[in-house]
Amino acid sequence: MNASLPPTSAGPAPGLDEEAVRRLVHLFYDRVHKDPVLGPIFSGRIAPDAWPVHLAKMCDFWSSVLLKSGRYEGRPLPPHLTLGSDAGDAQFARWLALFRPTALEVLPPDAAQAAIAHAERMAHSFRLAIGFHSGEDITRMPPLR
Image (cartoon, rainbow, N blue to C red):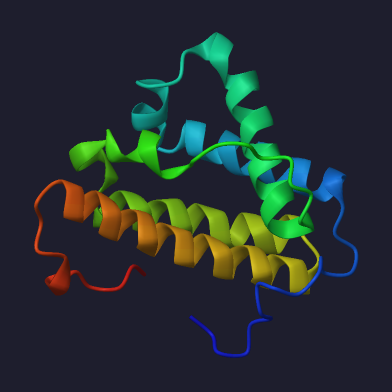
């Protein structure tokens, strides 16, 4: 993680709005859906007719994170705890490998860096929580790349 990234408590980055968040979410999950590693995981848990609901929830989540909109109501960790081996280092690293370039492509530079920093913290936190709940020795987990 880059120490020069803006703090998460700062307001929305210039040029960031709901439309940019929508583009980020939709393009990212389009890539996830087509990805050979992540696509089967998501497709196995989200029915085709449920994708619009999932995308709307993810738009609410990222709007709350990036725009401080408060639209997301939920707890993002519990559904991920059920993933077991489908949420290991390789899967989270792949998730980040898709998210980073998508954010850089879609968002203004400062907003992209803020989104990436949040995604990296969230992936690390989720990975530790999943490992802890599955009995892994989380003290030996390497940082996600």
